[in-house]
View (cartoon, rainbow, N blue to C red):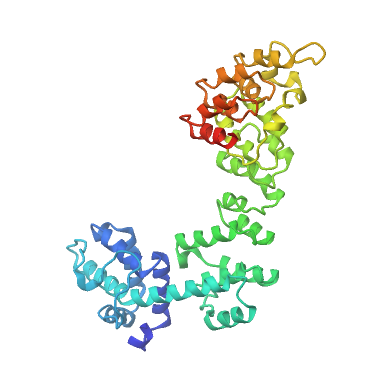
Length: 423
């Protein structure tokens, strides 16, 4: 459009306008930002525009001013809430006439470009969706890509088609060699040219995608500061990177490592000081309760109990043998028991009734899940102030139907769900 209106526009001016739009995300978002400015001489965003204008030669400035006064032949099409220029939008105050002039130039230029930009973006988003769909016939995808892909600019940057290029890269039908090539092109973007928001967005999408090759993940870690959390959110993050991330002195990073499905058991053991490790899908029931017992003397006890129930698997059957498989010398919980079950001398239901009166919350919890716990004990525990204990009663297969029916109307939604599921 700009070349049609101003055939003599220089490549430099075109590049400057394009880069400014990328930094501002879109013409309409730039217009929206302009409307939020109270005083022009105090706006950092507007300072960037002034710097752009000052970098131009006299002919380029005249071309820019000319373009800003043109009306778009297209009817206004906004994607957000910004109105067109003719609707009398509020303008920031300034007694500096040159600042006001530069504001009007930017405002007019973005109004001119907005509708065409939005239409182009919508078309490009549709094409990107087709290019990323592995069900689209290969021949059609190739034709679409050849028709819509852009050539790199003078600095070998693929600014114009980044979303389509990414869609091709992450199509499962794309070869590994091509995928690496396209992703390397996307990662070659310079922050100064496309702005912080867009650069970070592109890097994060690549880092988190399960199809991203290991070489690309390592490249991101090496050249993008603070990218470790994005990389370990990738479900295929390798053990080597997870070990590297575990050394970070950051609880959020360590939590992501702890719940990652590729984290090995020895690393989970190192991270067992945090309750988040209980969400790791590869832990066995015995692993879970070993860690839980280690945590119970720390402040994470309550958090650990809640995290256990975020897991989708049902480990109740394994709870029955959890105590018998643990070494009493390693467990503060077992050390708190009055006595350990001896099958030769103890009546197990009687012993479980004793355990249910323990001062240790976790002992009571495990006991109430045991199918041999007396029904009278279960009925009494259904009135417990602890929702976890009421949950255990609701889950216990030996709980009387009448008691479970009462729990189906419990004030806690987790208890209600468990009771209703077992009715």
